[in-house]
Image 1 (tube, rainbow, N blue to C red):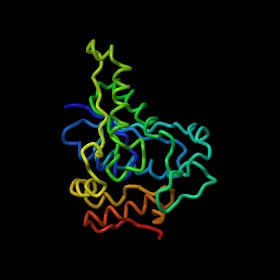
Image 2: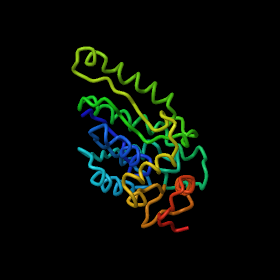
Image 3: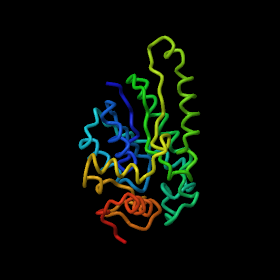
Image 4: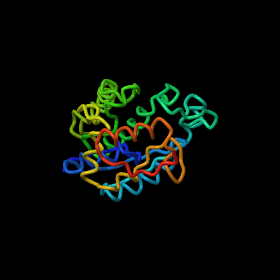
Length: 224
């Protein structure tokens, strides 16, 4: 079976993307601790790696990025408040490029042909979620390994996301719910960490909207 490396945050998007591809690929998950406020997502990632049956799951500590990012964004800054709707302050500078670079390095090592992240059509406000960005990154990574690819030592990789196939967050939810059932409510979307989702940050609100659009009753526990 072909191999795929999945950027696996423990949220709805990455968990459902992995579920979507599970029948076609041997999946290797990689999660990142980058100094995010939502450290709870790592706990969720560990749990779902077992539930979905990932071949391997690695948690990579790149906490030094928190210092580099400083107060540039609300997800790593301890001084900035997380908004309830999209503001550019939520965008962590080229976060997906950092994640995908490391994931792709692992993919080339494994001779995997696919690198996956959970960007979907609702992520249009995020430049590093758009298919055009992923396409250019994919081209650059393959160029960086072109001699190994041409000699047969490496496999050419494709960077894939649900966005690339026109899938929305609610589309992913429907597929994920069919695959993992009520476990889906234990995915972690909140930009903060606590016992329950805060229910008021942009990500929690997007989660609520997606469940509503999917027609699936949301059993997630929110503080508000």
